[in-house]
Amino acid sequence: MISSTALGGRIASTRKRSGLTQAELARRLELSRTTLVAVEKGERRMSDGELIRCAEILAVSLHELLRPGWVEGAIAPRFRLPRLEEVDRGELQGVVEVLRQLACKLVTLEQLLDIRRPPSQIEAIGTFHAFGTAAGLDPRLAAESAAQMVRAHLGLGDGPAVALDELFEVEAGLKIFYLEELPPSVAGLLIWGSEIGANVAIQPRLPRELRRWALAHELGRCLFDPEAGDVLPARGRERKQTADVFAASFAKAFLLPGPGVSRQFADRCRSNVGRFTVADVVRMAGLFEVPLREMALRLEELGLVARGIYEGLAARAAPAKTAGMGEAKAGSGEPPPPRLPARYVALACDAFELELISERELVDYLETDRVSARGVYQTRRLRDLGEGVEVELELARSVLRAA
Amino acid sequence: MVTRLVIDTCCLLNLLASRLAVEITSVLDLELVATPHVRREALSLRGGFGEKVEKSGTPADLSQLEAAGRLRFEPLEGPAIESFVRCIEHLHEVDAAAVALAATLGLALATDDTRQRNVARRLFPELELRSTLSLLRPALAGLGLSREQSCAVARDVRTRANFLPPKWDPDREWFLELLAGAL
Image (cartoon, rainbow over the protein chains, first blue to last red):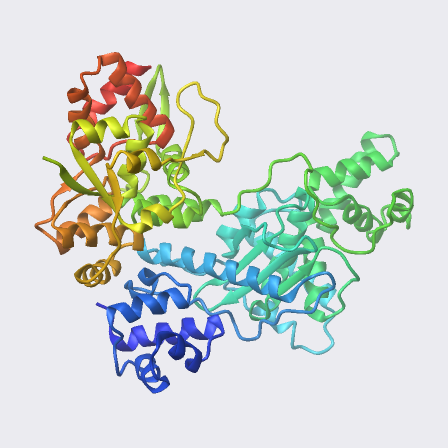
């Protein structure tokens, strides 16, 4: 049974997050404020009826309040919501809370499965943060260096970086969610907390290349200063703060490494007998899976093509777009990315297989209905061996050799 | 004599998927008791074999069972509240409510959920536990269905509710054989 002190702390923390004062919660519970103060200090325990009512008022699961192991999941206090055009702050705060709760659920699953994940090599690198405080260091140069270091750690060479989600999740400890709740004019959101680590929400309605760019940008922000978090607009004027310049430069240098782009450019010129056309820019953008704009600008920046290539292309498009990511648009034809990271789904299914959570809890974790949750679980476990034979796998069973 | 039984959402969904929920409860002379949490949960079923249904499923209809007097909802009150709070440390609200209601009313609890069953056994050792198949198997026999009809029922429960019996269920092989016969 949870101690009164721990329970009181959880109630206080949840109350503060909900924006209720002690006086307001006490009034709604029909308790005196001094009684609620005593409850939150652990000097008094609520009755069963009061507990149920309290959970309803705070819009929190009573199971979460009482279960052993609780993830408060506080976001670093330095995170501040910026004022953005076309974005309602209340709506954005709501998305921040959705992301935080998903982050808490992931940590809860890791706790249930007794997974203690050591920091990845990239997470363990603290040197990038020094760039934020060292005087005189150009953040663009710092970002190029950071991107090279990260690529070297990941063994990527100078070629296109594929499977970014898996790469960043495993190697950089980022938890990546694709949240439809993000306003269309927001491309990405980064939050960090000491319990939950770095969590990123990416706009699922963006085209694939822009999603990758946003993800790389948020990794850059995370490397530079994770506590500050980030809200990345989908379009708008270039941001000039050091952290933004670093992140934007990091995304460019990571996804379009200078040596790799130059090498591809040279190879194409050789193959085309000295020609390099707009079609080649498009093909290279496809190879590196980046927006056409970024590919063109990178080639210009590296001095490989004439200046003004992209401006020339953009001038023929209507309406003209300002600098930025580009807006989210519906119906691009490609299937949307899954909302939840694959690892999260796998952990939830493992916890269910190991009888650590119930079917109803699995439904909550997968954010779906019972029948769909059963389907997700079974799809992972059932394998067709051919000739009409289907086997049910115990995916959570260890296959390591005994020591 | 009518047998009252608390039914968890997971079993209720499977009974509804069979398309014979009223018939099953009638032949077994059962009155199913459920908590309000079950009604609040949005239950949906998939299409059966050969049926075209929206990917999101169709809402599961409880009205026929209620109209036949085979399903009623009881709130958690009095001593059930204390049992509920005892359970909820270990279980989701919906799961905890079903266990608490059954323990308080002294009724058996029908659930296939392994974790819920384990917690119920630990907290309320005297609580009788039933499963979907412990109802389905005698019901199909009592209804006098042919093997082909029984196979069709099994296929409906499998496809409409994505049901597969847990490994501990003694009727698991019986159900899988019916499914094999339905192919």
